[in-house]
Image 1 (cartoon, rainbow, N blue to C red):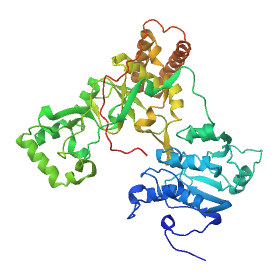
Image 2 (tube, rainbow, N blue to C red):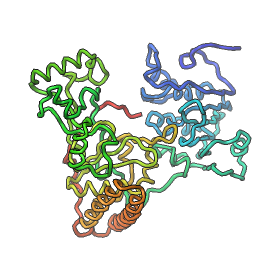
Image 3 (cartoon, rainbow, N blue to C red):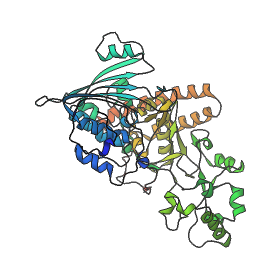
Amino acid sequence: MFLCCDFLSWDSPALFDAAIANPPYLRHHDMLYSHDVFRAVGNRNGVHLSRLTNAYGLFILEICRRLAPGGRAAIIVPGEWLNANFGMPIKEFLLTNGLLKQLVYFSHASLIFEDALTTACLLFIEKNRAGVRPSEVLHAVFVHDGIALDVLRRVLAGDSMMPDGIARHVLPVHGILSQKKWDYVLQNGIQAQPEGFVPLSHLATTCRGIATGANAFFHLSASAAKRCGIDERHLKPCVGKAMDAEGFVFDQEDFARLAAAGRPAYLAALEGKLTRAETAYVSQGEAQGLPRRYLLAARSPWYKMESRPPAPIWAAVFGRSRLKFVWNRAGVFNLTTFHCIYPRRREAEFAGALVACLNSRVVQRLCEQQQRVYGGGLRKFEPRDLLDVPVPNLEVMPESNITRLCGLLERLDRAAREGPEPVSIALDELDEAVTAAAAQATTAMEGEPAPEGAHPLPGSLPWEPHRHRGGQDE
């Protein structure tokens, strides 16, 4: 019998002994239902789902619900959900109910399908019969590159001869459920928190950069701002592209060069009483339909810009070989090409030392446990991901160490403007300093007296950055 219907809305008590599925990959805004399909599917399966859940996540839950006791399913879906926030309740559902028996996860660095920029993972699911306890482990296979089907069959069958490029792990359910993102864990297994390190949240807070809603209208070059008649009091120095920050330290000279090159370097923050020219510029935006855009429609007036203090540290949102952190010594604003990091200590050198640590190879390797990886190996952080990045506990460092790390960052910045060989030498020295700092922090954190000159962190942030919704975190 062949049925043609919407599986997510199918009203039938039918159960199946087997299912093979390649469900549709649809983002939440492409799912056009007259009812709240996320709540409906979630209620049927006892799961609280985010409204950012991709359609294939709903299919996974419904397939599991419709399996008869002892029934099995094989499902192919993208791998992003294993590293996204919307996937967390689905992972918990599968593991706590003992449904996910084996997982094959293909490295995001390689494209499995030549004609599609997507990732892939295989889920092998079995519904336990009554009285069978859920398994306490997950069998996972990580595939670094393509793999022949017969080889994959042998690996899944438990063949002891592991071919190159394949990693197999038996992961405790309680351990893997504590990991927010699985990309690193599936490749390397569960790693212990290194000694002397603390989550970045211990030293700083984060938020995304300023979302204008219309960069071409609000982010202007000096000549464009003058031509449009924007008053200087309504212009804020602002970086909008990652390429505009060449090194690891961005100072006033860098900003001056950016502005002199005719690049967009000023944010039009129109507020209060506008000049006649500014009123005419606002009218131009209205004629272009800007007030109807998603972000701008929620603002009153529509051209009112987000307000927050400049972030002392910028974190690049995307990267391929590594993620970049910049010390914003110029104190200028930034758009969403960078996330904002606000250290709890306000001293400039503390921010520089923290940026040095974040750019070291030592911390960059630890960053891999928190990043999201997309097709082709593109790496991405959301602001909340950054908070979990382990960094040396600078809270217990003497000021001499803070000063040294800050100096090493400046050396790395100079090297970055010269070429790859100087950068490698600068990173070697920085790695040694970061490792030594972590060792010193370990001693201090084990109950030894704090080193002379070390300062405890205040209980609240001096920056008080504003929180905004926009650029939703999946």
